[in-house]
Image (cartoon, rainbow, N blue to C red; front, top):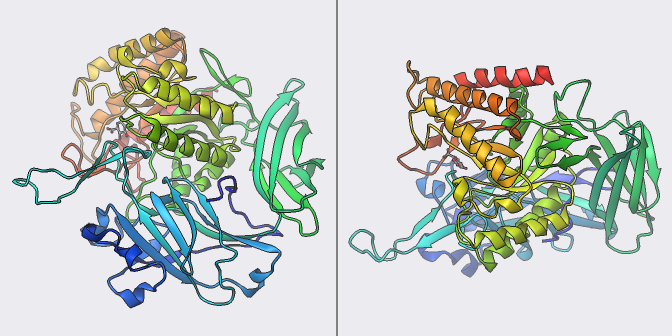
Length: 605
Ligand code: GCB
């Protein structure tokens, strides 16, 4: 995979772009013969000639599309293929053609016309292969993708395969596969597949870092443009405002732009006339066959202290939730309609933020967050890490590198979360997270870094080396179930103690209750919508007294935005039902209560 070549594919006067979306052919290999596809060279044959294949949409997870439980629960090598044409004009020897996957879960190997083009391991992140010499121009092309979603102790996230030797309970050779995170591990080609052309010398990376001078009247954009390929002389950089008027220009591939009377990027509804203003950063390579690339950027700063997180020097209070990429049928498959609906709901609630629990979300989602002014905490897929060692560290560092490379230029991204609920009550987690923190800090000096805690305060380790405290806490749900009267007491004490102990501000990244839509009970009992509402309201009272007493709390994030699918287990009815919205994205009673609160913040700021 071309690691630094990860700019989102766009169409410009020098680039053509097409997607390979549609119904692909799909095969799974029997668990007893996992390597059959490699032995029989499935990457060279049309599945029509092999038989025993399904139709599978791309992009989509494969799990919930068919009626077959083997496919739903499949863990192992599955195979996708598709036939397509590319235009003859792409044979031009002045062009590159790149093949780009937004994400394939989890490991993938990609062949074009029987030849290995690219491979990648790690879900939720894009990768690119150079397809130029593998394609047949003006003839049918066969793309084959082998996908393996088996997680291991050295991957992020971790998974475990066991072969129990109790033959009384399990047949010989029976495989038990497990992981600790509690969301369904949707697999397959989950995001966009693009083919795009570029000139031989082309823009392959851009890094911007923004700041202000002269009392916020002047914007400063420090930038670096990487050009790949041969014979590049120079760059023409142009910054355009929303009316496409030129604001400032430059002739160097790296340097500084100064914007007089800058319009800063602000999160939604942060009072006054603030808007999420985006400029267009335009690059033109200055040679015979120029490449053009455009990217939207926002000018804003972030700072953090022992008490606050500030954007453009103003303190932030986050009102949001954790989400999932999850919906019926397509699972984790990216869908514009669903994504747009979610942003309408976020705005309807008056929320200003979410965390990409528990993995990096689609690039299209972050682009929309940039233009809507929604703040995002980007989390890696390290959910419930419990084994720490050099192998998983190597993988985890690679994942963080890919995340920062992909998301570094989004004004909406305000924090990196290295992990969710790792086993950080053990000593080995300390050097692990310190090293990982340093790795990310070296790549990005501009954003706070954390990992999300769940352990008791007295046992938490490594957290003191993070910039900001984050905590998931289920008072009156997983602990003291049914005791709504304890929420204020417990939450207040814990958040106060935590901030005092570490002298850092805290963000409650998860709290909530399961509520089955339509289930009511007065007085409240667990699983009813009524209990859900009261539990949230008790937390609201706590947050208000923390704020009143100047305990440094950075915000409140409810678990979860919407109901989402979980593995089969007896503590949940197939879904985690802690959503403010149902899985169909309709409001539960609690959504109205949250809207009232979040609207109050909006009106007071
Ligand atoms: C947590 C996890 C989240 C779960 C949630 C729950 O602490 O971070 O992934 O979904 O609890 O509902 O159990």
